[in-house]
Length: 229
Length: 281
Image (cartoon, rainbow over all chains, first blue to last red; front, side, top):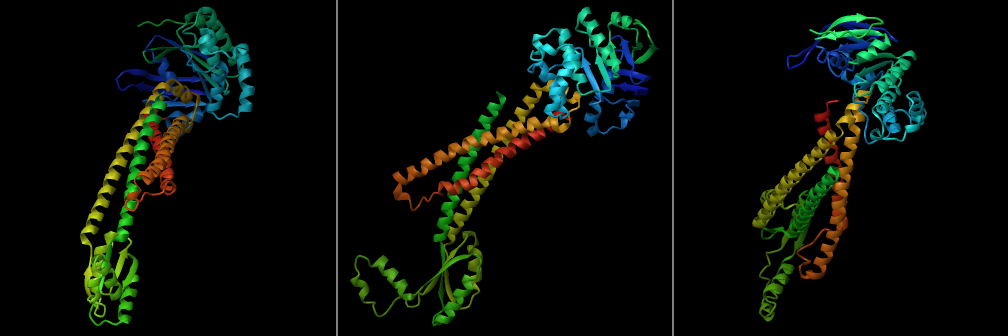
């Protein structure tokens, strides 16, 4: 499903963000990517989203070689991915319903279909009652649920979550992780980049630890390992 | 807010364009009218028969630059002369009743479609057998030609300047719009929006700004132009013969589509190229 072979990424500033990453993630897996700031986690997510190109190495997602992907094909590729961020990235001037419907409109889904899909997603994330609320009226946890609903409404087969609990309290963090687990159980491959040691320890999933652009451990049913220099 | 500012400035530009267009069109209309009164006159060799004169007339009429040819007989020429110079003492002219002093002055008055082609016509006339003398109003023709060209150049320069200003304004609006909607655009791109989907709202906005920005000044110009023509007709009817304004319908038959196309075109191209430059999606 996700396959990286000796991927390196250096920026124009000279920073070597990734230094020879090789990893494989199977369909339906739940994977944590952990590491300190500057370990290359976010660069990895950007490479998977095709926001960046690797300096060298091969990245394959859903059997597609991203290195050979033409710019015109990128939108279609991204529709197969769902993505959530630490800062939620909701549209502040639109309510919950419109935020989720927006993702469907972008891929030209008929309005009739949108009216069916959005309430389903809202029920899944437990916000069916709050479809009229604006982001500013919601708690951090609720905003992240909206972001999750938006990421899932187009039925991606991979969900990338970049620090999804970074702005949440422990209770909300747990709820979001439970939701991600439910989504994973429904067949979606989930990749979570996080700092949250408590959650990683509690979930007992595959954990890939990174440090200074390289993978230093990759263990199944593992906990969080703090890797200092 | 920025859109309103753009509409206002676009309106001002198209309003200025419209005024300039009206002035240029009316001036050219007046020049065309004046050109019609500028004629080349040809006189014939002595003893030329009427058949030969008619043959020369046919050759002249066949020329593409000629709009009209009027044959003036020697008698008509004398009558006209009398009217001008002996109006107050007609008895003085009576002595010439049987001896037309202009007996050899029958001529063709040749009116041109375009005064600029006068030189070509005169060169050709000089090579025609049977023509004794050619009177041309070279000075008038030169002045009109030069003035026409000057107005043409000035109008092109002003229109180009206004176009650049308008494109810059639209481009500015779109740039600000992109900055304001940066987050929305980033989300759209991550969700998998196509380039067209991201660009479309900005291009549509540009076109709408152009359309509204053109409609307002065109409506205003229509109103003001109608008022001006009526006012000039009422107050300065003594100048009616000299200042022949284009009727409002005729003016707007050109100005309306040109103005709207200009607004929409500036809106479309201004926004299209700006978004291409800034988004690189």
